[in-house]
Length: 224
Image (cartoon, rainbow, N blue to C red; front, side, top):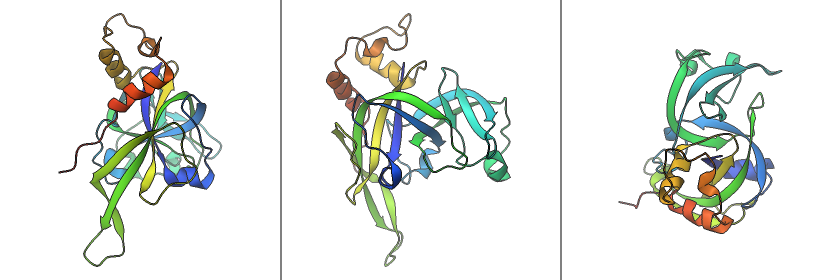
């Protein structure tokens, strides 16, 4: 079982999301985003590395382009169907191509068409507090400041967020997959990389102890 960091935006939850707790099983559509596109960039441990093949999955509203990660995780590469995505955004990527990407996994419930769901168990939740600043002196438009970001662990995702909170960073355990984060947990527990089956890193570890360990593997850089 692979462990994956997933960002769940505050507005997605407040609009039509269902709060969840550590230990809950959930089913979410996952969208891969460039780290620079989410809250102005500046992400740290939360970045995910995925390698796999590009596929177009048929849907009633049009095909969804996904990356099928080599260990089994399936994530959408675009929020909309292939025929609605600009050629500039699609680039030279074609079905069958093999990609290696680094970015942020996000829960996306407002796509068109619906994205494929990923089922997993919530192993840790951190509320993300984000600083903002005026886009320019005197401007009423505020933009995220990557260096002004903090995380605090909670046992349950709130339905409603404080103004300074931008959402939650969730660690999701997905059956049939493996990840760089899972490798980091094995290393932290002193388990050998060779010969250790995926999922062994959480075996025998109490949920609270696992959440505490995962907190140390999801940090933000110190300001300045």
